[in-house]
Length: 240
Image 1 (cartoon, helix red, strand yellow):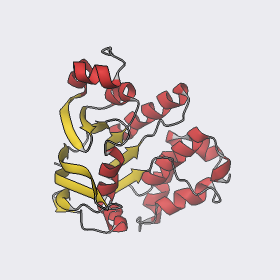
Image 2 (image 1 turned 180 degrees about the vertical axis):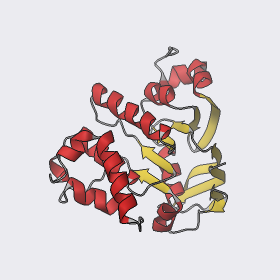
Image 3 (image 1 turned 60 degrees about the vertical axis):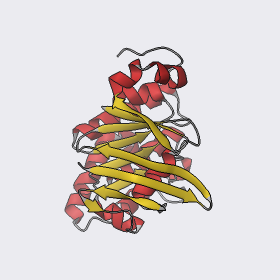
Image 4 (image 1 turned 90 degrees about the vertical axis):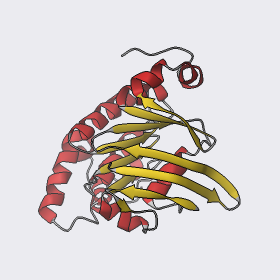
């Protein structure tokens, strides 16, 4: 098992937002976490990344306990996150943002090879590498946020709402690229409001409601589940 969350509880002050969740991700999978706003999806990703510390429970990555590690040490373990809202450094160029993503890579030749691969995935970033990131479109910023995370050469990529605010055609492009990234050997955990697109992309999924995992199944089974259809798919099953 590449990633395992065991009985995880998380609080913000006195408010408990995750109530003992359990989640597993195997190497090579794409796993999606579905849920309404406030369900605890982003908190789950932030906990894995070390940006939010659990009140109890454990997180294991490659069988190593990571829930007490600092966030930068977790990146060095092979976990990278693409945050909600992209959070690119707008006053830095595309290339400078990419360079920041490579802070854990001690091998310049390997970093350069990774960068070339990312620019192949997102040719528009190569064209704009000297452009200030704040002047990019929303879709281009999302590509940059993904590219910057990939510069750390992660084993697992966490994505928080990558389709947020993007036109449908751009969403389709980014999700196709995520499939390519996964095919290259990167495991993906995807938090996404667009449940239809997420389930088409993912192998398996979890449904999180009010800090509890209420469903876990293959993507196909979740698509066919009446509860999922009613809550997240507009009442209709989706066929690929």
